[in-house]
Image 1 (cartoon, rainbow, N blue to C red):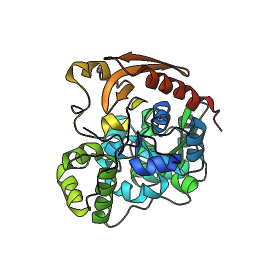
Image 2: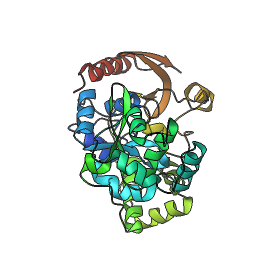
Image 3: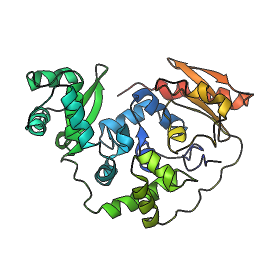
Image 4: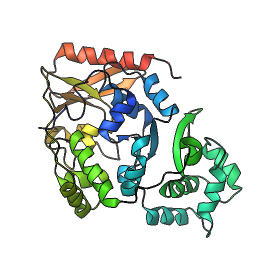
Amino acid sequence: MRSVESQLLHRPAGLSAGDVVRHLLAVQAQDIPSAYLAFRARSATLTRADVEAAWHDREIVRAWGPRGTLHFVHADDLPWLHTLTSRSLAGTQRRLAQEGVTGDDLLQLIDRALRGQGPLTKADLEARLAGRARGQGIVHLVALAAHHGLAVLAPPRGGKPTYVHAADWLGAPITPEPDRDRALAELALRYRRAHHPAEPDDLAAWSGLPLGDARTAWRLAPAPGPPAGSEGPLVRLAPAFDEYLLGWKSRDPILAPEHSRAVFPGGGILRPVVIADGRIGGTWTRKGADATVTPFADLPRRLLDAEIQDVRRFLAAQPR
C-alpha cells in the first residue's frame, strides 16, 4: 500500500504552500483549479488565497517540469530540476515547424518579445511578435524559451494564462545545475521521500527520464527512512491529476480494476477521486464550492462530510 503520509495526506500542521511543493517536489498544474485543490487535500489550514499568494510572491513557480508537463515547483528547486526535466528541444522545434514558425532567430525573437515586459497573455505576445507566430505557435515559442531557462508562467490575467521572462519574474534566467549526477541524486532522494514505496521504474514514469537515468539516480541517492505512520481512518477529496494517482508507474495498488474506467474514462480525462484509507473509494465533482461524491462502496459519512465542508472552507478565501 502506498503511504499517504509520504504524500502529506495526513495533513501535518504548520505547512505553507511552499512547504507542500518543496516536499512533493512538483505539483501538476496543467489545470490550475485542480492544482489548488491538491494543496487543500494536504493541509487543514491553507486557503486558495494562500496558494495564490505564494505564486504571486514567486515562492512557487508554474513551469514545464516532469514529463514536460506544467507543474508548480519551488523556486529554489528550479535550477537542478530544469537540468533533468526541461521540455524536449527536438519536440518543441518540430511543433514550431508544424505551426509554420520558422527561422534561425526564434530564440532571440521570443527573448526580445518577453524581456522587460512583465507577464504577457498570448494576445499580447502575438502583437509583439508582429506576425511571426500565432495560436499554438506562440505557446511553442514560449516553450523554446523555457527550455533555455528564459520563461515561466505567471498568474492568469482576466482568466488568460500569462507568460513572463524568467529574468523579470525571478531576477535572473534559470541556470541549470551543471553537475548532472548531483541533480540525479537530489531527484531520487526527494522523489523517494514523497513516494513510498517506489522503485526506479516509478521514478522514470514520473519524471520522464529514461529508465537507465532513473536507476543511476537511485544508486546515487541515500535511501530515506519510511515515513511515520498516522493514526485513525483517513478520507480525502483529491483533485483531478493528483500526485497520489500520477506519482507512480502503476495505479493498481490503489485502484481496483473494476473502477478504473470511472476514474480514467478516456480522452485524457482524469476525474477527481476520493481517497479512503489509501485506496480510491469513489469519484467526486465540484460546482462552485459544492462537492458531490459518487462512492464505489460505503464511505465513513462523518469524515466525508468533513471533507466536503473543507472544500468550501478552502475556496471561501478571496484571491489576492
